[in-house]
Amino acid sequence: MKGFIKIFFAAFLALAVFVLVLFFIIVGVIASKSSDEKPAIGSNGVLVVDLSVVYNDKSKDNTVNSLLGDGPSVLPGLNDVVNMLRYAQKDSSIKGVYVKSDYNNNSFAATEELRQALTDFKRSGKFVVAYGDVITQGAYKVASVADKVYCHPKGGLEWKGYATSLLFMKGLLDRLEVQPEVFYAGKFKSATEPFRYTEMSDANRLQTSVWMNDLYSHFLQNVADSRKVDTATLHQLAIHNSVRTAEDAVKYHLVDALKYDDEVKSELFARMGIKETEKVNFVPLSKYYKSAGLNDAEGDKIAVIYAEGEIVDGRGEEDGQIGSITYKNLIRKARYDKSIKAIVLRVNSPGGSALASDVIWREVSMARKSKPVIVSMGDMAASGGYYIACNGDSIFADATTITGSIGVFSLSFNGSAFFKNKLGITFDGVKTAPSADMGFGVRPLTEPEKRMMQEDVDSVYYTFTSRVAEGRKKPVEYIDSIAQGRVWTGERALQLGLVDKIGNLRDAIACAARAAKAKEYYIKEYPERKGFLQQFMGGSAEKTLKSRMMTEEIGLDQYKLLQQMKKVKTWADAPQARLPFQYTTN
Image (cartoon, rainbow, N blue to C red; front, side, top):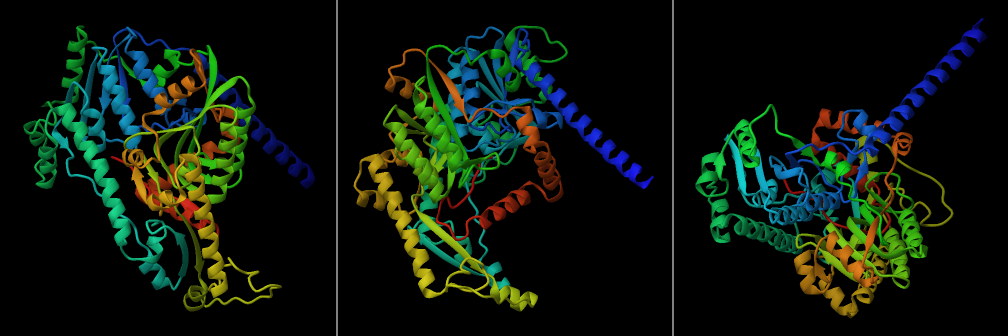
């Protein structure tokens, strides 16, 4: 009897799992079919650009997460948004654009591309209206280009200048008696400073001041051009904290008027010349993406390979990782594919593993021998991100792209004192060579081991600068003088010869088409978008639920910090070509 019950419940469990998987497959098939259908936009549509949405470089199938209530089934990429705004200029069903401007979750270069796209849209003669309850500076950079900018009467506009704050952990490590052992090449390579110092070094303070002031100056100039207020006046408003209320924002001509949501919608009806009905025909970008039909395949094929995220060894098991094997194979596939006439490598990466970067660099170099390879830099193409970009035939960057950071570091931790003095734990063992237990983290490095670690870092740094010198056709000595781990904006990088032109992805694609002598062309994007089954089997639903629960429990900022600390564990004992910080606009 017991055997029968065990078999029965095992079979029942297997059946339940089968039904559950089948359910998700059926839902996925239905969702994928519905995603292929073009939704009706209707007349008098107002395209909505919601700045709180993160527009990653590449579009993403979001079916699994959408079933869990986390967004639409397809998340358009940044270039898709730019193309949709371009298409909407001539689309009679779209009468204008509404910019939701409370908060901007996109970084500086993506924000710049959105702003440029809206500027181009305005040339069609159609309206652009921006509204937010409280408009942050990052959102205002985009919103300021609108014909009219409105905020809530009891809301306002953030106007305080830019600032950055870095977390230093040396004091914590000292208290815990954990000894960091740090090796680096490049006096500006500051990624390990949080473990070495309690405050910024002079070199790091200098480089941070330069790039941050470059970004701020660009922001002030953007606003000055849109609002017809000179940059000096705008800067003084921040210095004196002059914009404290919504009325102040109107007084200083930063917003046009204070309105409630219903009043803004009434204006939209008036602009379209129609009577007010129950609601405005707002068209989300995710809906318009399916309707606009932007992926017509005619002419020659140009491959756009999106390298977005952290550079890691191997295949890269998570979204937001650039696996060396995966991207080596992608670039090689595009190189051998004779139907592909040119390659555009879109880099949006803070770097990572130096070895993985070199693997990808090699494949880019090989691809150049058979067809044009154009590089487009997004928000950042720094350190390892610059490593994989430096050998392109031509390199495009946005003015606010964060790039450079040509430097290397390696990091190890000795926790023996922590384990002994704090936990009462000691270690002992047997080894067949003096350094066999190197990297265990339970003893300090010997002097020969320290020399070896530094020699490895110096060797990788020399290789890195040599690769850059070869790609940019500059002497190694010159590259070393502007390298040293120093971070630059795209605008500065252009002056230094690290990039060739200021331009966005669309500009880079056009350049690739010219280089390939392709008069008519279409884009093939890589990596190819994951379908429902790949997402489901890859655990996307589980990861979404887990991250959502963690964020709700400890808060978004604390969750991001936790994720960053997890990444630090992967830095140990291997040379890293990595940006020293993370940043966003707001």
